[in-house]
Length: 94
Image (cartoon, rainbow, N blue to C red; front, side):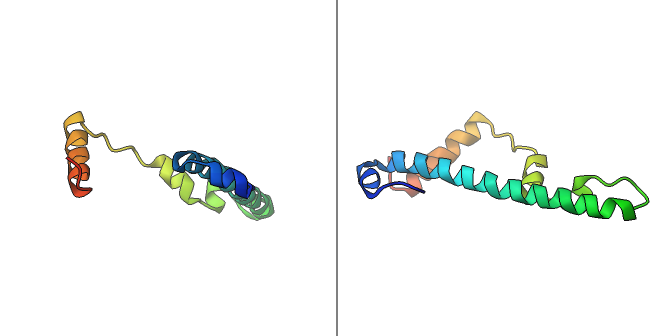
């Protein structure tokens, strides 16, 4: 992560979590960019041999694209509260 030992020792757990999350997102975006470039290179190599016009998704589909297509589950306030109470009870909280 590029964090010094002194910075690490001074972090609270929530500060470390935020720093790790930011580092993880940056690292993941770097990898996604590399995959996107590879897909475009493959598209450019395959297009001359295809009778139809290809789109990047015809060449490769990535898991993060599938996640974006899935609709978010709608949860009612009552269901959210019930789940919260269940989680509290499971953790031994009142």
